[in-house]
Length: 518
Image 1 (cartoon, rainbow, N blue to C red):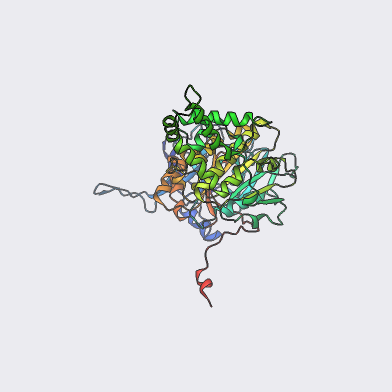
Image 2 (cartoon, rainbow, N blue to C red):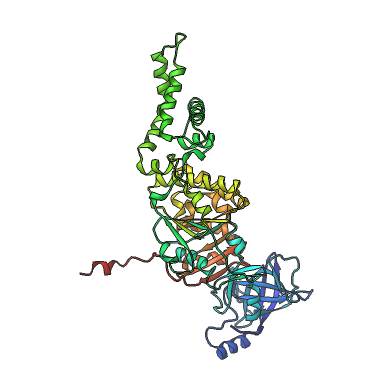
């Protein structure tokens, strides 16, 4: 990269946030390329350039199209000078060298005829240096490997982050690398106190993450399936209705009465045994079937049994599911797993074994999100919590909302309201088109690896926006470990080679031939 501003050409057209530049310095550019080697190209797609404004500030733009000036119009060739080119440049923001600040807001435009220059390396580094009290280095610019791309960690970890990409493109390694960076000297804080102790909860569907944080300055706790305790009694009446899919007309009122009765029978007035709900419902329907002489009217009892049948069946299915029932049933001597995590002052990363069946995972994510939200609202002094959902399309799926609606229901609530109470999400998925639209829209920042599926690209195009369509065109051909970063945590959208994760998570491409060797 050159650390001088090379004159490229002049502005010949201004249209909205785009300008056209006629290249006027072909010979100089070719000479520079020859002198400095083939890797130096002042003019190439996605390179940053600048032009001076009337107020002496510099407006920064990105080359998004390069065209030969010898254009065809109909069947007529309009001939101009040989080797003349037109650049289409998207304006990105304004740099004020007096206060050393880059701002993406644009309220002043250059004039026709103003010269355009390549961006010197020093200035490019200044632009990518976020002027925030804290910043985290995440990788190198694809266009210039000597430029380190930084993000605002308060936004990246304090709001919601979406990480998308095909299988094998490096999503898990990217997440690991960024978290590892918190303790690898990549975090810069204003008061120089880098002794941080995060609280990150990972739903690890593929048992990948534990290896990445062993012996890496992080204190981790692996939570097995057997350790997960999420008692049902934290649910509100409305949430019980949703959990058990109780119909509003007949089933919901009886279910509410059953829960009220069970709560009154306990000392705390809150906790009770889930398996007793069915018996309590049966007692209520018996009482409602009694005649004036206090004898049960069998006809009415049969009708009540019919009305309650589907509700009782759903309760029975949960009780008979050994995995789910053990997780949600009341056990007086045990704390729920979220209380353990929130009160744990030793560990920083909590890896939850989450390779459950889809219907089980739906219930677990629902209960976990509900209890976490409730406890965080009631205890605002607890640390901020980052909740990482790996393979998120499995349990916050837009198409499966009717069949697996519990997880989506409460994660969507966390996405909308969690930030106010110190809960932020990292949502990782290889199929963003299947994710809840609410979740995607609530993300403030995105890291997008290679995506080739048409439906997924349509989702990404809405994230990237029309103005950055040139970057979207690169997404299907991104190399492994390279990603498009954009959103509030980053100064401008950019292709970045993410720093290596070390140690790596246990996510690797299958070695089929090696496994077949005798």
